[in-house]
Image 1 (spheres, rainbow, N blue to C red):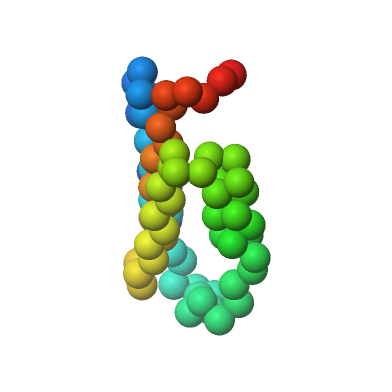
Image 2: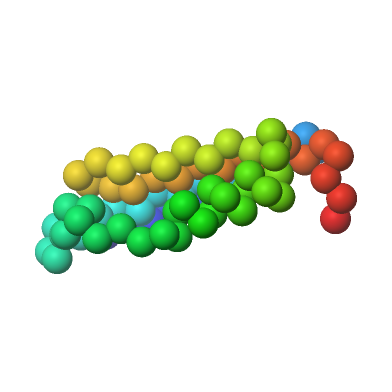
Amino acid sequence: SSLVISLDVNDHDLVFMIVNSKSIIGNNNGSEKGNGILNVKKRLALLYPGAHQLDINEDIQQFSVRLGMQLNGLSS
């Protein structure tokens, strides 16, 4: 199994990516999905409307997530 994480930040954007390989043993083929992803999408929409993009992909070998955020105008 493998896990790759990357984070790129500049003056205007933040891009976070994670790729996680799937284990063949105990694979439930997506039959049990929780509300976590839906909750993350709702929270991003509330906190960063129009200033983010979340892409989640899954195939038989891996999960991948890419979160891009515009940093212009965000206060720390």
